[in-house]
Image (cartoon, rainbow, N blue to C red; front, top):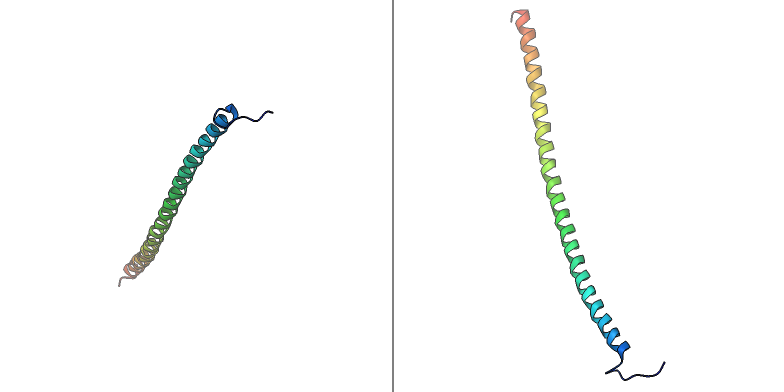
Amino acid sequence: MPECNPKDCPVSARVDALKDEFDRYRDSSSKTHQAMFNRIGALEQDKTALATRLEGMDAKLDKLKESSIWMVLAAVIGVVLGRLGL
């Protein structure tokens, strides 16, 4: 292949065009990846907040269940005492 002058070489022009296209692709993909990582981080924070809220709900439900058990037990004792005439 004969040597060509870089200023008027068709291969050189195509290489430069490919280099520019690759640089644009790299910049675009970097931005896309950064956006994906930001979104994943936000989802992880949302998951943590949701887990905290669910733990609080579980604690309240356990307390409610305990109170319900005591209420049923008091009602049963009241019925038994009522049957005994006390």
